[in-house]
Length: 139
Ligand SMILES: [Zn+2]
Image (cartoon, rainbow, N blue to C red; front, side, top):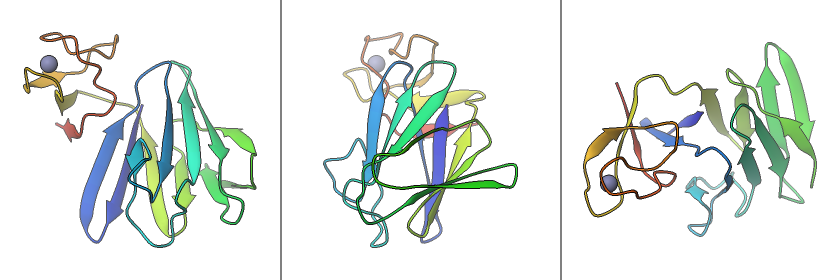
């Protein structure tokens, strides 16, 4: 699965590696840093179970809103929810889309630095680097 969001007209997207947990927030220490003042420093955490995603709110003051087919769920501190493909997530004023990675290509952050199609394993086929933190290029 991938997450896609726009800040100030610039589109960002990140691929979620199966079996891993990522943190989302304004802090640069987060796995996925979303630099916007309405996003909490550590706002949410997403676990990718391979076939499904789970999201948990890490912010005591800022809810995480999950929208899917017109259903809107607001998560308080520590609350968890499934995060299906097609859902939209709101962190402060930032809307994050959850999408299926069709023809997803990323630039490998490892020694090879090549643009590669993401294999199911989540590791670069050239140099074996985990692609979880790579920026995504879709197309
Ligand atoms: Zn590589």
